[in-house]
View (tube, rainbow, N blue to C red):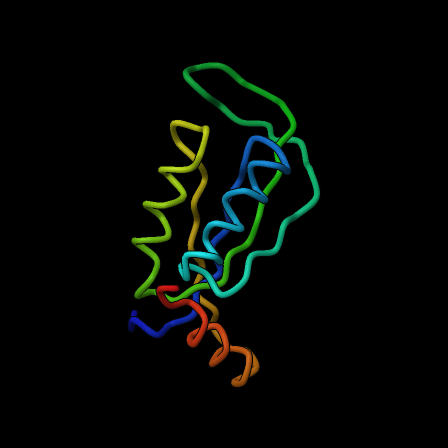
Length: 109
């Protein structure tokens, strides 16, 4: 994957405030061009041998492959979870001007 490949990074958070706080930091620090906050949802998951269920929030960050490791590290540093969901998905295609905008804005502030 080339460094200018645009990625969507899906991240879950404990609540909407944590998602907003982390998302804002990512954009302010130039690690993401944009973050979309997603409404609250219920997560059902296995953790330490038990089935858990509880409220969560999520966000999508648009960044580049070159910025992903720094973005991942920053999310881990700001996150309340010991193992946050951080999942990068490559943008297979998109509007060329939008993709260029992401590339131009996912740069150090």
